[in-house]
Structures are given as C-alpha cells and as structure tokens.
Amino acid sequence: NAGVMQNPRHLVRRRGQEARLRCSPVKGHSHVYWYRQLPEEGLKFMVYLQKENIIDESGMPKERFSAEFPKEGPSILRIQQVVRGDSAAYFCASSPLGTGATYEQYFGPGTRLTVT
Amino acid sequence: AQSVTQLDSHVSVSEGTPVLLRCNYSSSYSPSLFWYVQHPNKGLQLLLKYTSAATLVKGINGFEAEFKKSETSFHLTKPSAHMSDAAEYFCVVYTGNQFYFGTGTSLTVIP
Image (cartoon, rainbow over all chains, first blue to last red; front, side, top):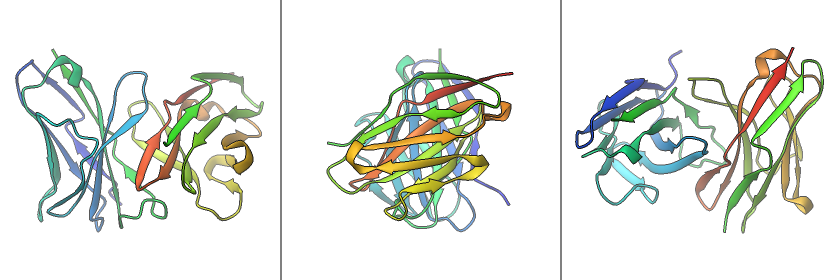
C-alpha cells in the first residue's frame, strides 16, 4: 500500500545549479499538487497538475520554476539556477479526483532542498 | 479574500490533559475545512475534515473539531493528550478552488 513517494528526501545544491524533485502519486491517482513550506511558515500552494496537463500554476514563481506530470512516470518539479531563497521543504500531494473539498489529498514526506 | 489564522504558534500541555488548537478562517464562500498533523520529517496526515455536513467532526486518534460559522472558527480539541500527539498541526481551508494553509501550531506534550 504505497503512499505518495518523493525523492530525494534531502537535496543540496549550490547556487546556480538545477534542482529536480520527483513525486510518485498514490497508485491510481491522476491529480498531483506541489506545495512549498518555508521555515516557520505553512504550506503554500504552487501548482496543480493532471496527467500531461497543468491545471493551475497560480502559485508558481514566474521564472526558474516548472512542473510536469507526464503520461508515464513521476511528476517533476524543476528549479533552475537555484538561489538561497529556494531552500525549503517541497511537498507533493495526490488525490483520485480534482475536487479538493471532497477528496482528501495524500501527502508525501517532502523533499528538503538546501541551497548553499 | 481567503485566509486562515492559527492563533497559537506553540501549545504546551501535560499528558492526560485536554488539547485545544485554535483556528479562524475568512472566506467569501462556504468553505471546506481540514486539520492535518505533521510529525517530524514526515508528510502531512489528515486528521479530520468538515464539508458542510455535521458541524462537529470526529477524526482519528480521538481528535475532533467544531465548525462555528458565527465565529468563523474551526478549533481542534482532544480530551486527553498523549505523548504521541506531539507534532505540528495545520488548519486548512479549501475555498475558491484552492487550499490555504495556516502557519501551523506546534504541540508539545509534557510527561
């Protein structure tokens, strides 16, 4: 009974490098959400994807950040040219359907990104 | 505008005593409300949710919460704290097709 898997759990990057965060949703779930948690803050919504579609990216920074959820394989959150301010925990959640009020989101353990 | 306010960033209780974690929300629409718990280095786990059914919601591990529309509150309670309840708790509002998270309340349980 695999839940949401995220890897790596910890990622260290130097400023200017690229970070790739992976999320495998619960089997059978076709909706994925990405959140960022800065120190001492709650989670902030970043992007909502279905297979091969970005549904809502209103929480994504306009530059350097991108996300995808291909037909096969995990969802990827990509951060190009990382800066110190990108250091945070990034959580992925999945749900079987997209109407969030009814369907619980299942969260992964998060990826903790540290930019040095 | 939509927002969630968790009134206490830290709560400390003795084992066996009641727990109260406070949450107020603002929403232009009828919201759905959730409480999640996060143990160290783990993902968030759903404790309970309110989706316009009964205003008193029972969750896992003995937790419950009451939706009070007149007070725009959704406080989380438990009659008797257990050491394993020590964690971070997040109040979440779903409204306008988005989830909004509170900043969290860290619960410490003293033996």
